[in-house]
Picture (cartoon, rainbow, N blue to C red):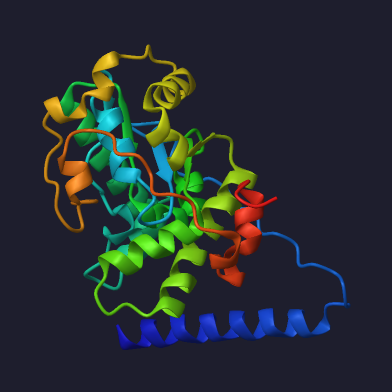
Length: 284
């Protein structure tokens, strides 16, 4: 086992050195070629071929969106699933080779497991569309698009500086610089996915201002009829409302859509977030 681990470590070291060398030799002004992430070899065997993923930052209203969607008779939007934390770990040295002979890498085995979890939720609910709104999915959107080539996406956007303020209000002792960096990573992931994947962009501020209009847009995108019951999410059971499962604030527990806070002024926006604010239409 130690020999296999050393071999893997050596391969990774060689790959890193090769990448560094290629970077050093690249002519000035020439951008590196983007790697094309091909669908994994097991992607044609999905039990859920076209799941829906909400890609958003933390503190962007994804729990509100999920309870609105979960109130639809045909849509199952469970609490955060954190699929990327479900891993497959072979217990013997030869297991990976055996699975490889079947055309299944460890990553592809994990994708099969993830798919089975989504299918399990559909089976339990009796509905036909499943939505995963885990914010961390914005950091692994490439892998998700590889695992599910036919997946659908909702890009949930919120003013990045408002997100920073919300995180600081929620986390005691949080350092602003660290929070800004964290939020930038999330919103940058959402924007990269939005530029490369087909989907529907929804603003949190618009969702809270007029949930009927925005949920109608989403239903049209998902090809399901809009249902008025979606706006009365407090009348239905949406499972655990607590930390790690999603937002557990008083706003969510109220059962009613609450208006978003006023947007930050231009002079309040952290320099690191200004460009993304422009791209999302929050700055002229």
